[in-house]
Amino acid sequence: MLMKPVTIVTGATGAIGKAIARQMAENGYEVIMICRNAQKAEAARKEIIQTTKNQNVFVEIADLSRLSGIKSLAARMQAPVFSLINNAAATPMSREETADGI
Ligand SMILES: NC(=O)c1ccc[n+]([C@@H]2O[C@H](COP(=O)([O-])OP(=O)(O)OC[C@H]3O[C@@H](n4cnc5c(N)ncnc54)[C@H](OP(=O)(O)O)[C@@H]3O)[C@@H](O)[C@H]2O)c1
Image (cartoon, rainbow, N blue to C red):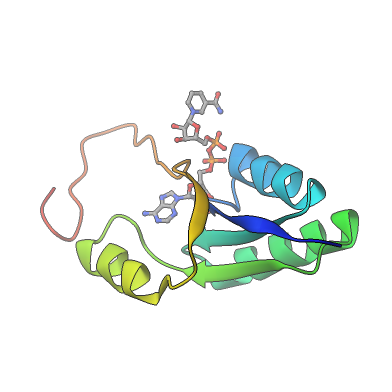
């Protein structure tokens, strides 16, 4: 298969993020799943590869609530990126602060 450029999906273990990652893989894109939980990420990656037959699905681990996690991830991203889908988010039921005090 002729691969399309790289697409990055954050929160790709979640309901919407995993569906987007699967759809992009189905359409032949190389997909980089940005996830914070390695175990969940690997399970989702395997499931997407199995259902789409696209082997070009990869995981990068990053906690996006931490500036250090974002900076470390950005430094690791070398490939030209075709699309970045900023899907990851959390909706806490009460006020919370991140480790950076945000
Ligand atoms: N579902 C809806 O009805 C709805 C409506 C309006 C807007 N949205 C928005 O759509 C997006 C996806 O919603 P969803 O329903 O698919 O949510 P979800 O199932 O809760 O998935 C959220 C994803 O974001 C990841 N995530 C959360 N905090 C993170 C962090 N600090 N670093 C890295 N990853 C992090 C989660 O990782 P873990 O798996 O490790 O938890 C998970 O993969 C969110 O932005 C949400 O606000 C959803």
